[in-house]
Image (cartoon, rainbow, N blue to C red; front, side, top):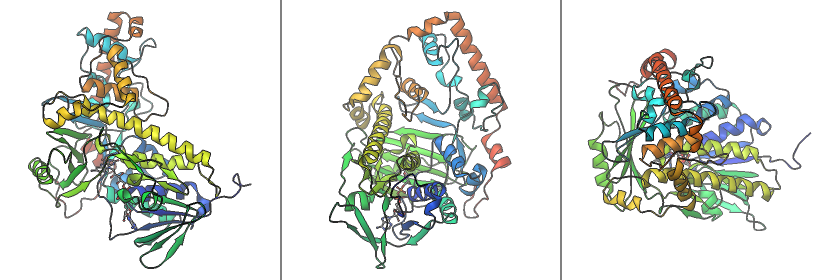
Length: 510
Ligand SMILES: Cc1cc2nc3c(=O)[nH]c(=O)nc-3n(C[C@H](O)[C@H](O)[C@H](O)COP(=O)(O)OP(=O)(O)OC[C@H]3O[C@@H](n4cnc5c(N)ncnc54)[C@H](O)[C@@H]3O)c2cc1C
């Protein structure tokens, strides 16, 4: 029996970047009834954006959900493992902190870790926060292994993501999706036609003259937003006033030195630089604000800070941070860069794609396109984008750096949601997180403390533990982390044992 009165009979995905192929693979996996009726149209001539290589832990769940072997994905995408992000020079020059994945410390007598750590920290009796996180300690030592679920120690909860080659990942997903009946069409969309009665998209026409009709369209055309904006004129909320960087220059280089198990984000005079280690190369990029720095100057900074020989010419990118006013408009859903762009500081791009498609499945429409489903999807995603925006803005806003760009960031007028959160934290170190928010309390806590946002007091909840008991709990937590870290192999050795990719002949690895 069908649960829907008039089910969707066909879907057209326009665009074959990471967004297009994640969408195609997910729909192929969960909508077998549409086998042969999910089409993906992409233009090799236009190409893909060619960046987007650091992920966050939900990628691991996503790979599991597709039912493929994680080691196979790692091998075929030249991937490495990621335990968090190191922020260098953000608070001030020479400063560094890690935003690790996974839990930090442990609750004692039902008192969560952060309140009692803060109490002892304020009394000068706690070590730096990251020494209580196994992920952070392992990342500092370029180590990695997967969790050991049977262990009664922090080894049980090792939490990780991947760094992967974006084009190889798209190719992997393409093979997966095509094997499950997704039909790929190579061609450039020339024209999009809408129905006069209700403005719904009726068809797309390729430059070859081929006309493609579908019940539902997924716009994965990147910043162009060919359907959601070009055809439907949905509108874009510009967030430059909060996230002012609007340019990036990216370049790949040879890998040197030990294989890091974390992303590095180094603050520069006008923005920040990423370092993403893959098995065969390192991805680097400088995200900056054109109001304060020329493209040439950014390229020069990036070129002068590469650790190995550049493997390609630099790729110059322009963007406007923000989001589409509606992610889903009529019979068109925007996914990936077509939906919006929060800059890559916390590697949220690929996650937003996965999350977008999985939520489409939650609200899967029939051909009547119930407005209630569309509205709920849009309000949920607006919420997600706004909370992620706040988290990113926090990094820029709370800095002691004195360059013009950073002074500008310090004086940005904060959205109410972030201002309230900061005020709450500055009192007693409290973080209230809404259900479904992506970033956890531990993420907020690590970044707030890392950016030197120090509360005046601590949560009285911490007094439930005696001071000496709290100190003893910290010692216990830290020594557990130290013991466990000693058992974790070097990242490079773990990969060599489980999932080494063949070394491409053209890419020397030293
Ligand atoms: C500087 C920067 C760094 C980033 N770093 C990260 C990161 O570390 N981690 C992360 O998760 N995300 C990151 N992102 C985001 C990530 O790159 C994107 O989310 C991801 O690549 C998805 O892009 P996309 O598929 O939406 O767009 P694109 O890759 O641009 O793909 C668009 C597709 O649409 C097709 N197309 C366009 N017009 C037409 C047409 N007329 N006819 C037919 N086809 C068409 C193109 O051929 C292409 O296949 C970063 C983004 C930027 C800008």
